Image (tube, rainbow, N blue to C red; front, side):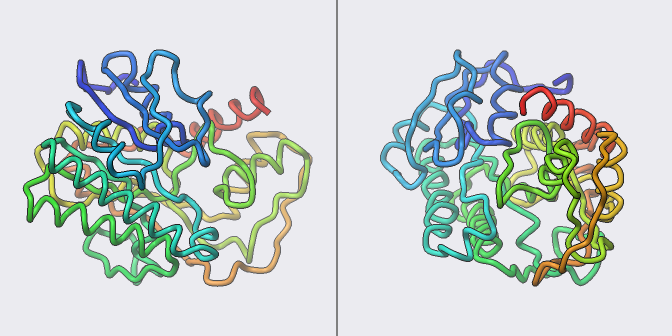
Amino acid sequence: MSKQRLMDRSILVTGGAGFIGSHLVHSLATNNHITVYDSLTTGSRTRVPEEVTFVEADIRDGSTLKQTIAEKDIVFHEAALVSVAESIETPTESHANTVTGTLNVLEAAREHDIKVIIASSAAIYGHPEHTPIDELHPKEPTSPYGLDKLTADHYTRLYHDLYDVDAIPLRYFNVYGPGQTGGDYAGVITIFIEQALNNDPITVQGDGSQTRDFVFVEDVVQANIEGARSEHVGEAYNVGTGESVSIRELAELIQEITDTNADIIHTDPREGDIDHSEADISKIQSKLNYEATVSLREGLERTIEWYRNHK
């Protein structure tokens, strides 16, 4: 990426064989010394460049993690259970992966004096009282996933305050882009694209008026890099675009770009679905010099092109 400004650093990426983690690895691998730490539970070894050091291990394995982190400059912590639905089915597993895993990273970083960028989530806010959502918005998560992310987010800030660890939680909104996997728990963009390319009906849950802030994965990568460069540590930042789109409009845009014959149909609303979500990104803009540079149309075009070439 053109804005990338980390050079000759020794970097660990947990979850580096996953969707966001692998994009981060590819962005940094040319100019830095990268180690990927991934259990391959959901990630794929094929996503990791050959020249990158790969450690197949679980984030809950604190001793292996400490050995791997030693002598690194920066840790990007992307490893976690990524499914809200799975967290509801197996809350103890979700807690162990996200909370215990993050604690292991923070403890290792404290021991070795390493900067940490943690993947948090907009899920910590629950049903928003207002939009756009700023970082001080009340936090009432509605799933074990959201609660685990909130706990990890808070631990990250606490480790800065108590132990002087240079740590930043980044609260991702709806991330999408090339390489996001399909299946039951995939983001709505992945589902819509697969339906459109197969000429299957594009299924919108509810009336489609619910809105989301979709942020392209390259912009999320850049937010991580800016966080790693910044001295504004110990506080959390939203990562989004500051704009939202309705799910119906999203379906129509994907329908247009794919030039599909697929119709848009409406199904029953999803129970507990959040009506509106949009990030207030003024804080990350002012403190981390972050800008969302990829428009929704461009991001969808690039994502759809990837799916055409890989499916």
